[in-house]
Image 1 (spheres, rainbow, N blue to C red):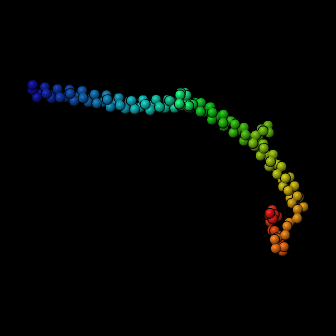
Image 2 (cartoon, rainbow, N blue to C red; image 1 turned 30 degrees about the vertical axis):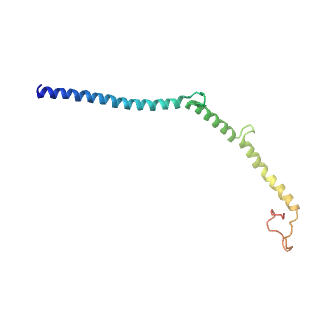
Image 3 (cartoon, rainbow, N blue to C red; image 1 turned 45 degrees about the vertical axis):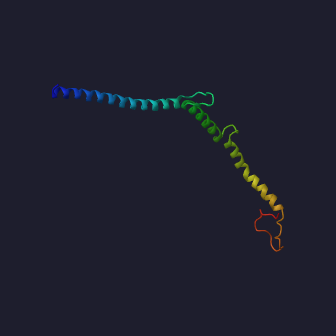
Length: 130
């Protein structure tokens, strides 16, 4: 065998080895990428319940659930038929001045107790002796 024939044979061996390495390297990359895509799709679709595992909803079902929650919150935070929290807050805010006036009238009828040493009344009208 001549040097030229050995060189050609070595070239073939190197080319075939490089092709095999490229195929295995590309295959390894492809398998890793496909695993990631599969994990994404499992998260997207969700998983059914099975023994010992409760399962979980997919992305679209979770979006529907979030939309329902947002709709409920929006209903409660906007005045509507009188049953929302916003309506309740508005009713309390509207009746608060009348309530405070009634409390002031009642407090004015309650005598302030003298201090324990009997010299002066308490300065704060809301503080009462126990």
